[in-house]
Image 1 (cartoon, rainbow, N blue to C red):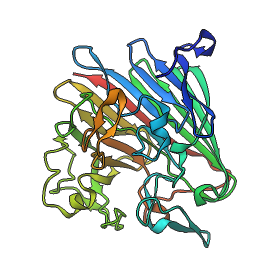
Image 2: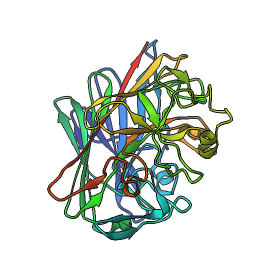
Image 3: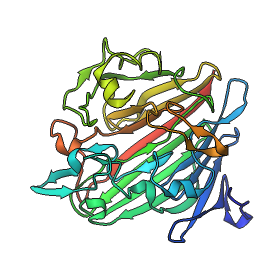
Length: 360
């Protein structure tokens, strides 16, 4: 567990503490953002990982609602991306290659034949530069990283900033910006695993997703290119439904994913910050609302959690958490009909995510 921080290591609303060292001996820090309501977000500069996030239930009782680890050691090994920043390309790129401006780029095949979440050493496995700040909206942590030209096979030097802010309205916001010196592809997201009860499975969580369509996938979980209406399918969350209410249906898409592991096409205009999804735990009353500027959100029901050891010695089992990963569509570099993920010199990539907490 991190040591107590000295006063000199604090900014108003932000406390810095040691979180151990990387495999090559570089020091890792843990930053605690706290608001006046007692909500806390703990973030490490290794992978920009959200280690914990506390939220009150309808009685005001706090619980940690994200999966994670007690020390840096477990994060250093390849795991299920608990709480991490994801890049340079979130989700899957088919056959670990894409062509841009007539040049084919080969990536690491770290998910069968596909490239997943940026490759073997994506943004979830690098040490970001961290600057605690007291922003107008609340305590903030600015993380920056320079991804060099050719890193994990991607072209262009990409300068990335990720700004976490905890507001007085119990919102944890994340603002991504990025620039490049060569044409490249970018798709950044955040990969927290949520359990609003703080324990148990999430099959009873009520899920709403503002999407009329979803992206069906093949057996390798690569989108087929179709934008399929959700009406009449287990993927219709336009009215709230329990995460587990249809997860066991005899449906090819659910079989491919082992449950839900699919991208939903949001109804809003990409680039505008709008409500994309809402999750409610009926037992505790906790509510998580997701707002994003991205065109899609990946809904994942923790199908591959297999007893990894988490905080407090708890074993995280299958479907003990769910993920809502706002992002561009998977495999977009190979799917010209999908919205473009190309970033050019002189342009600024922007993506805002807001996790809004409440209880009723």
